[in-house]
Length: 119
Image (cartoon, rainbow, N blue to C red):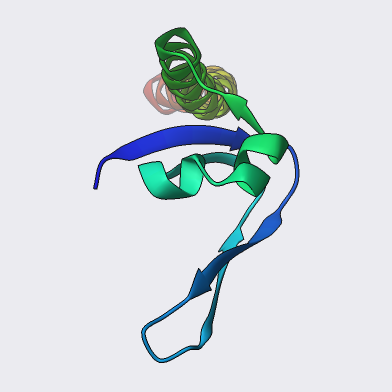
């Protein structure tokens, strides 16, 4: 049996009749976009509580899902980029401090060497 997509505005419990043993068949359908058998989509209760889904709706949903995924990935990358930028700034600050320390030590070495030569 072919599958179709339906959009439900609320969760449904659909009575699909009885099975071969006489047991009641109830189908629980959650809210939102669902892919169901054609028989389920054509059930009067489902038809009454669902919206028709066009190819445009399906394409829009796929595009929205792709957009949402890309947005989440972008936000994750932005967070990583911000952390990397902060780390680079911290390392540059440390490199400047280290360069100053090295320059100070070189000056001390020069001063000590000059004192030793003078003696």
